[in-house]
Image (cartoon, rainbow, N blue to C red; front, side, top):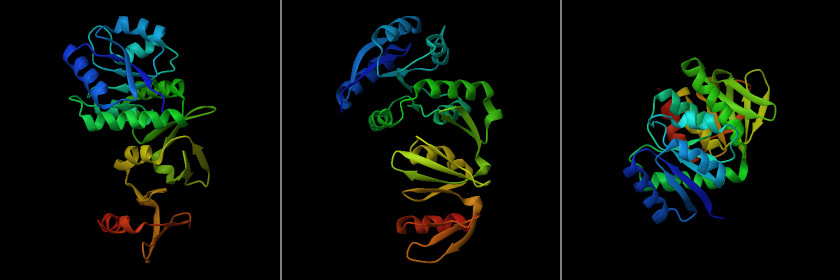
Length: 251
């Protein structure tokens, strides 16, 4: 993989130095081209250097990370937020396919985020759309609970979770199946949906299948077994997921 250029933005010098040191020592695929404690300076650095990724603190004096993104407008860089924040905002970040790291940043979490970044950039470079999703989600706040926002070629679709029967992985894409019989193909990883939909009783019964447990019609015994969904589709359950699945549906 080609080295990805990065700019680090954090008003706390110790946090900035700590992240820089960890990236240098443990993430050879990242090349830090600039660091700054000043959001105003960050804007000029980003416009001049056009980094592949920006590690951005959200809570900064004078200008928050979200406000900084607003000031930048159109942006080609990926964003990894480096702070804890209100719960709804973290959900908004997940919805937008952004990554975030909670301080103090662990080495394993940092490496995982960088690996995810490299894979994500190869399959879905839609930063402008994801920024728009984030803005919508933050503006709507809690009124968007129970919905996920998906960037499509036409714009942004806000999908009600209760209308989703299941999601199926197809290589670097996912197909979402709805109650009304329609489906939608999106360029997101199933893992992203798995993390996002966990609170809504979704379960990954197979490496390629994430299902809404509320819409199981029947369990069919077998080596791993199968589930019949409310639309009469039959989905295989992997043997290693069978025990966990049976516990979930029995509670």
